[in-house]
Length: 358
Image (cartoon, rainbow, N blue to C red; front, side, top):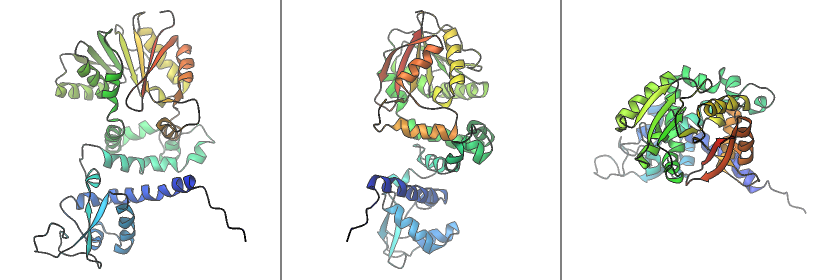
């Protein structure tokens, strides 16, 4: 008798990983890591404090504990002086309670890694947008426009709490990038750097820290530039770094040797990219170089973190990740010539471009 053929293991793993991601979101959104931050608690206690059913919560916690975020510990009873006891003095029927591991501690409110915000954002509004991906493929509207009623960045502006969480998530996802870029690219030839759309200045400040001979300008929309000014002053770099404001669709400050454009182009469709690149080109001199910091996709089928990010782009924006060849074509249309692609120790590369006439 022929045996039934099973689904490929890789596809099974991909499909069932969704369950664990959702369970981790539930645990985080209920605030369970915060409840465990000062000691183990029984599932019954956690259920009472979060207003959910203990038996259902037990199934979720048991699964999440298998990932190393939580662990179960034996409960010795109240007043014994044993550290492995439920804060409220009792365990579950099996005499055990749940405790945080060092990994689980990153899910507590205020943890500097931003891991909690990553979980709540990816499995919150981004998940809502991802669920309508089939509809997204049939329309020019983005997933957030379909699911949330607004383009992604408009949604974040109208929900400052979600916007702040997204910013902290970016730290969790891209925390090692600024230093990696600053180390990988040779800035010895330059004196002045402008970070176009530089946010709070994380990348620019890392570059200035690594290369003490440089001075810089952070250029962003007025609200962003004001926020960046506070961050720059707090960093102690105000003597080497100033801010300027405006829209990179219209013009960017002239006179810099190097122009940084980090994680901007991948958010945009081709027409918007060309507007930004032409603004940069208009500000550049023959000596200037444009440094595009992005994940550069391989041309083949091999796995790459940029391909996962590309799914986020098609879900949230009208943008996309690109190969080096695609960037070369895009830059050429804006009057720029790709000279070099510099890899870094992180997932991003630096694409160096100059004026076509230089």
